[in-house]
Amino acid sequence: MRMDYFSDLVENAIAGAQAEITGDGSKFEARVVSDEFEGLSTLKRHKMVYAVLDEHIKSGAIHALTIKAMTNSESKDA
Image 1 (cartoon, one colour):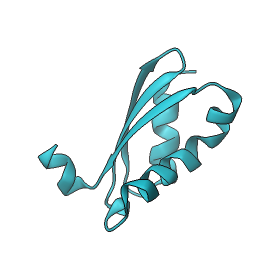
Image 2: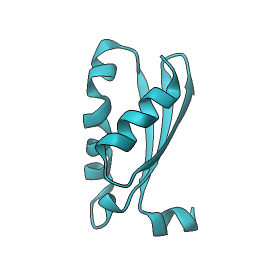
Image 3: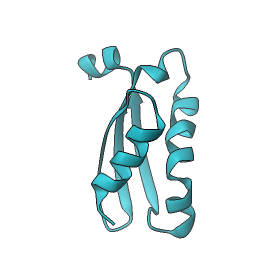
């Protein structure tokens, strides 16, 4: 499965999201920027991303996932 497939899933599920998912094999890193994360804790942000990719995590296509989820303004500082 192509990594841009996973990025597209996240972008389609989270309003205004820009997602970049990279990795090799079954270990991935997701950088997701969306103002939908405004006011949410890190845990809630991660849950939103996990919810989108859940079936791929359960199937083993994604074994390990590191998430950086931030708002647009936070991404400018990162």
